[in-house]
Length: 116
Length: 115
Image (cartoon, rainbow over all chains, first blue to last red; front, side, top):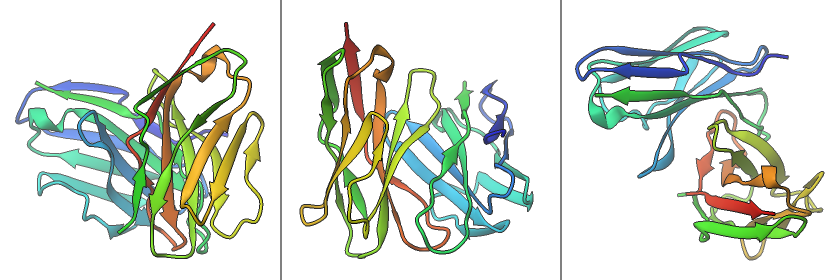
């Protein structure tokens, strides 16, 4: 079975440009999570969706960040305009999202973003 | 608020030896899950093991076991018979027993296995 798929794997862009990161969760998973990892702050949750609906976006750093999940098999994280401090590894993760049991989240390979 | 603490920035162990990676957590919620993830230098996050707060026995998955001490709020990862491929960053994480809640991660411990 395919795991969580993220694209691109690497992105280098210039300050001010728009960046779009993409994620395809594991088929059948109803919860999707976007995380950011930096050396300074570690792993931080940005936003998560349950059944395509954003549940908590309190981790989204600024209005420059936006995320969508138009259907159960696709999500995007957009940064517009990008800044050098956005440079990080962005992970997408998914879980079954059924019931209240703490379910395992499976991570994608991540997108390494560098904003010059 | 929930919090995960990993006090060991780095650990060193020789091949075939066992190693314990420490993790303490803080929550007032009685129902939660604890997870360990491995992040090798390639960057991906690999799920290793899960322990539920109501589980009576410590979780085990192959060479990985979780030493769960609920009263002390600790969830240490034990890796038996270390291998060179175990060299990686290890993250402890917690998630409340509520639908759709996200993981809270510790800062991680870097494990280096030498031959």
